[in-house]
Length: 117
Image (cartoon, rainbow, N blue to C red):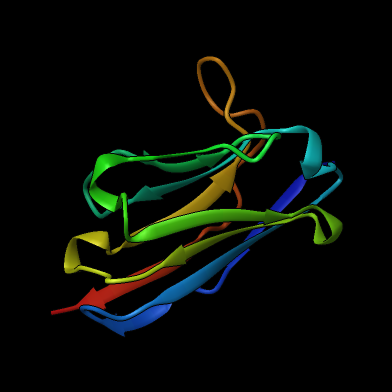
């Protein structure tokens, strides 16, 4: 059974930084694209960043230049370094493996990121 565990969230002031981690069990991340998503209160979950198996990355426009997605295949972990955080980045952040229509695995519990102004 695949389990995704996100961690690293917290409360930070605007302009601050956080590093999120996504650890997988039951699956080897190295062969898959992995993405970070976020869901703000009252909004739909949205795609934030993707890292492909070859290392290429893709970002949602509002986080380009501020967020960096990376992977450590030896630790079966994907990271999201978030700098210059803004109040509008406040959300619960999740990781998953993107499919053609939706995600492949069940969602984890996510990690809360709160940015104060």
